[in-house]
Image (cartoon, rainbow, N blue to C red; front, top):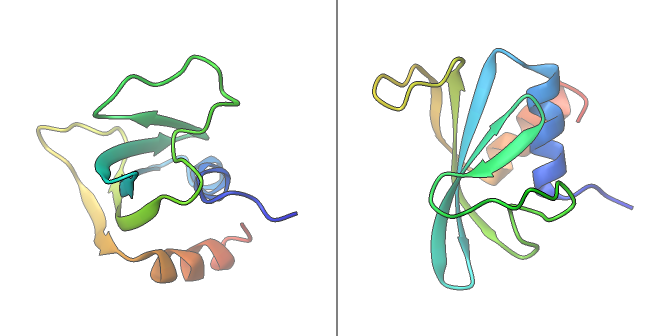
Length: 99
């Protein structure tokens, strides 16, 4: 069984704890921004469930873009490593780190 997009991105941030991912998605016609850091996902626009088994990125969500930022993340002064990454580009990055 393959891992979900969310789990793969969480695994990436475990392997790269110096990075924060900001993932812009569209799910059920609504946009959301997800922060992923050290293996945890949290919505920046809606409440996030306390239950870690409830996915923050729903199955079937469309990844609009992913930004890689240096941690700690400061929304007032973000330190971008790479911006506007497509899912296809991110898959290549994930493969490079073995996720």
